[in-house]
Image (cartoon, rainbow, N blue to C red; front, side, top):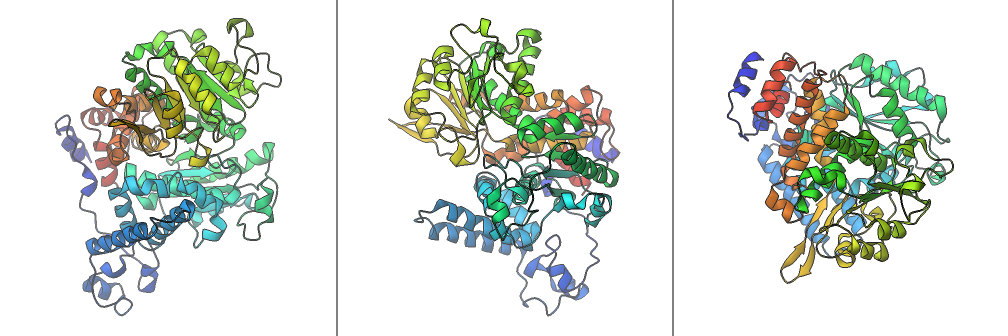
Length: 608
């Protein structure tokens, strides 16, 4: 391992050699015959050479001709492109998206090696299928799509049994767990046990973007019931038919699961995903200093949004130290909205964005008491001030003092706030499709910014606050636009094009998880998250930023993930939270990450 450290340290600065093509180590197989063909981790389909067919008891169980891995790859891609061609005129886009998901899922069920090769090589095409927006459709239709189990399911009926259940998982080692309770899947609400599609999709992105070993990942569903009556009445629903647990009864289920996981895999990173707001904040507060975890909806979304906000300042031709002067309105998910001259529909994600932005302002100015003065938070009842009755505790730090906001009043509508504040940024995380209507977007033309920004970040596509075409049409051609789900660039005529940025968590969460894993961090801190966001923000060149391009192409996801991961490692070392990875201690880890971010992928690959 120390030879590895010396080798990586000798790589010239700026090297971008990718180490994911290392020659794999031999794999010891204990299974024989038909059992191998039904295990996607080791199955090679018709790719087994005759020598392996003889050794592993496969002779006669496969057609006689050996079809190489490369030939299988070509065959699958031809099949997929044929599906694309045959569905070009299909008007039901949801049916087409699910058909594409099915063909990928069948490959995933059969041959994981080929599946991940296809995914990595074609990430721009396939990310929208295995991840947002198609994963939302998959979760909505999961009872009909279910063919074989993937991941683990822990339910309220398993209380007292989880410690023994965790040993039913066949892998001896797990590095990354994505956990959900299905209570707030994207902007679709309570989908119960069918929300397992989210952890599966997220972990596929970890493998494709961060190079994690697919045998060391674990998607988990905590089924504590559902309040969705349509699911309870659905005879094909796969989860518990009972109302959701609440209070201490709910927390006791999570506590038991966490204890079981950390007993077997004490160094595993746990990513919390799609918990409803009250539990997102409660579990983050409860666990973040007890083990290495983070909540992607609260912290990952915040980091991606902050990177976009910092990029917006650059797009205005200003230096980043102008960020504290930006006015942001945030609108958030029926309960909250927030502003930083950005409107952001407030939800757990909206509050997370707001919190991280305030931390960034505090870091720049050194004045925590005034850091939130340019942020405006809204919910379904309008602008949030200290006059609000039954104010959500999480929103208290961002509630405006009525005596300090001029003409603004408690409960002012989004349109009224935009007209009076004239924000630099309007940011939506509301899950309410179309809330940035024509009037609101036209009001953004009066923004005090030379280049106002509109972030319609809710997923899936149907829940986006506005479309890209609407934003450029009504708010003006000079805006900067970002969305959570993908939209096509907008033709503005006369050879001009309005660039659409996909402000998606996939740019950050794989790097955060990778950096936390390889640093051996005790916790994921605000400093580590801030470092990740700042690295993403600085990834784009000035030329790209001036074109309105805030985020890189998804084609670059492995490079981005390595850069973000290295930034997280450096932050963990600086905060003295890094315990090292395998035999590489914190000191050598820091030196290696300074030299080349791709040491992360190399170090990870060496442990496979």
